Length: 421
Ligand code: HAM
Image 1 (cartoon, rainbow, N blue to C red):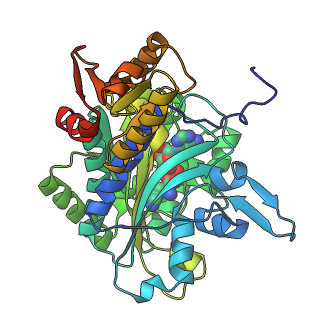
Image 2: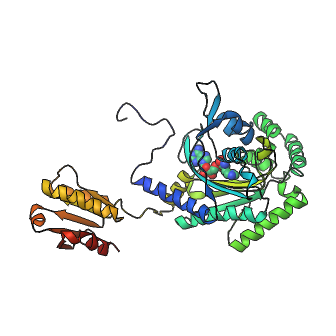
Image 3: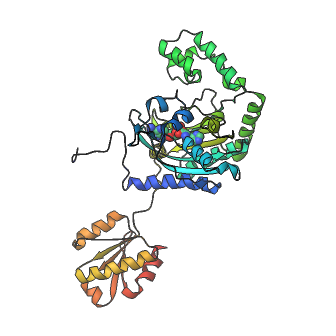
């Protein structure tokens, strides 16, 4: 360890040059949502603990094992947000956004916190871009949400991912199915822990990755075969829209998500280049959440959360680089005090015109300064020595081919602009 401190375990830092990829991924995914009319919501980093306990579900790992919960100085229990959907729903109810035009379409991005065991692709502070569309239960909206995520990934250049899709039914068919499944599972010769899970959340047993459990549950009843007529029609319509949109998916009737609020359409984007942490994004529809956290109405919503960190890892696994540009366009190299004074002003002039500029600070010699210029990724270097200054000229060097030209100092903006196009 360098120094006395390091970031807490499982908490990543983002710094140049990798932070440029981070911004590009976050912005590209957010732009895809904005193009479909989603407005930005900035959520609090922490909320009342009960919001997540009730919204996400007491029996989930996220709530029962992974929350960063503490008591504040006013003796209130608060929790660092482990996900975004409950907070969005809380804000919609609190501010009466559901009394305006529906659906309420919101997007968000930022850090979320889960006390998980850190490993590659699994952090205790994770970054998501998410969208939620609340108030209209229309299969076309489910398809829109899924298509936004798909478009975001494609625009980034990602291709080796798969979309798993299923329906978890609604409150007219899920309770009966749950019972049927539970009975089936408790009739098997399961180990104690798995039998316990079957009692608490039988659906999760279907997602068990252990081969012996897979084998035992191979003939288990599946939700997709027990959907109500309306849930079945809803799911069929989502698939028709996705087909028309050209979004490819695979039906995965055993898909189970780690949060309790899902109903009907449920999905996960999976990338095989990531090892165990293969989920790069997921989401679905939630019918009961608004009621669950005290809303007067019972409005359905649908949304996704995309893991920005895992998307970056997936891009790296595919060898796709997203942030192609260097840090700046122009790097100024002043030689001597008078030249530095002039160069600082030139940099200001260029930045005002929208050109990205950095300078060699600290009076380094020409060689060191040119090395810094190369490292900066700039297309052009501007070299100003005392001789040039006397003649009101400046040397413009194209760093991609080494070509160099003396131009008038008073014309520097136009000269730089014409070379950067
Ligand atoms: P989630 O599946 O829990 O869903 O998280 C969404 C994504 O966040 C995951 O697919 C994964 O890429 C990323 N992620 C989750 N945990 C970690 C971690 N420990 N380290 C790195 N990345 C992680 C939700 O959070 C829902 N709120 C999504 C949603 C929105 N559903 C409806 N609306």
